[in-house]
Amino acid sequence: MARKKSKSKSAPFMVFNVNYVDGMVTSNRRVSSDQLDQSFGDSIQDLARTAIENQDNEIAQRSGQRRAKIKSITLV
Image 1 (cartoon, rainbow, N blue to C red):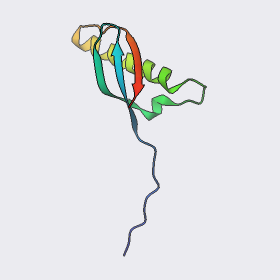
Image 2: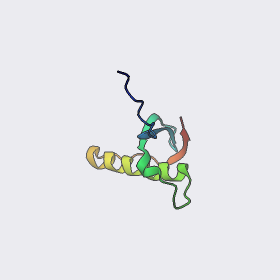
Image 3: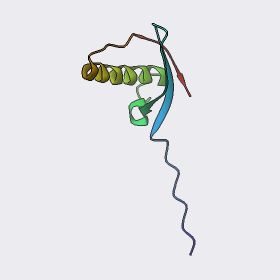
Image 4: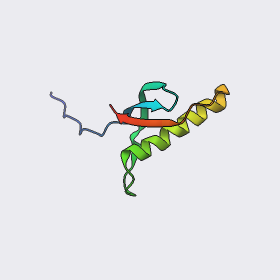
């Protein structure tokens, strides 16, 4: 008996490359699609920047080292 195909869901996350002011680059930074809700008119880039800054702040609290400010974000 054949199985029914399930409906395709949107991706659980989106991937971004991040360039920092100090020249550092991080690749494949994941941001949950839930955090990229555009219902209030914000762009995906702005929402991703906020989410990645929050991730960086959490990492900085654990490691004791601050990251430089984000220069640009590109969707992969």
